[in-house]
Image (cartoon, rainbow, N blue to C red; front, side, top):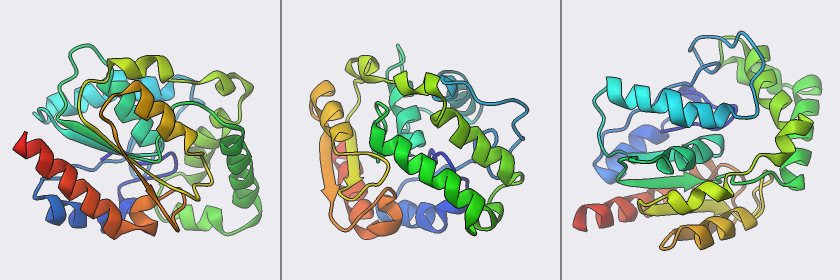
Length: 228
């Protein structure tokens, strides 16, 4: 499981256990560099930080733990990391389950991240996130600053999507404040056979807003993989 841009192991709450029970799969979760209780950032993130995570660190984690042909379950940044990894030559994956993936930067996304910056400064967001991260300032700035940097406006992984060969399930809330349904439409066109599910009454975190729908879709997707 690959968490979102402000996520961590603990922010998944009880969803990994529920996912394991629903699918019959073992589930691996971890906090990426700069998140949760993992090692702290020592420098600002670069615009290619998701590419580095997908191409350098994720392969090392899978190799060291002896994980072969996993289903990558990613949310937001984590979903983008999963897609980038799946596009690697020789990537050995059974499938991808993607919640609210980003394939390009939209004005809506930037506006929402600007609002998050203001909320971190003026509301209890800092306090709430501090329960889940060793250094909440570093974690928040590492994500917020790079997404709002002018150089990041050109971030786009559409050119990689044609190299994705494994089955894909993509889920997004219709009311997602961090991305429009154009993200799923681009993915559906670029990766033939992608299963797309749009959830009503759901924002950027389908596993929190509509957990039963996500669990049901995940169970059916994985069952189809086993049957293939």
